[in-house]
Length: 91
Image (cartoon, rainbow, N blue to C red; front, side):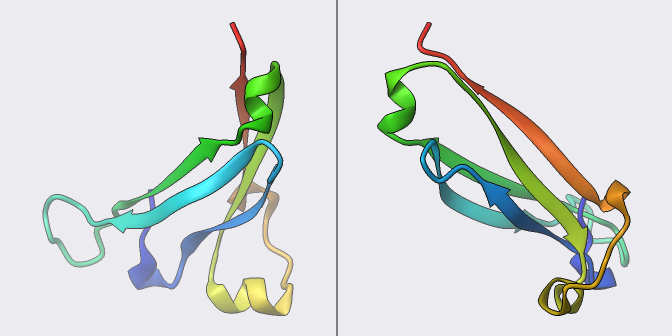
């Protein structure tokens, strides 16, 4: 879930550029336009040619924060950080 009207959004912290390329990122609003209702964010990655050479496990790391917290390096709760495992297999 995501609700930019509260000031919070998902930000990409890190991913392996050798295995993945960020293709797109967008906010999808809720189906019903209710004040304060959250939508969700879609992140699309494409595997690189290097990733096709074998099997890999990598991670995409995101944080749910306000933009000024990211810019100033303000510490946020660990619960706001999501570490998403990605498995790339040549099988």
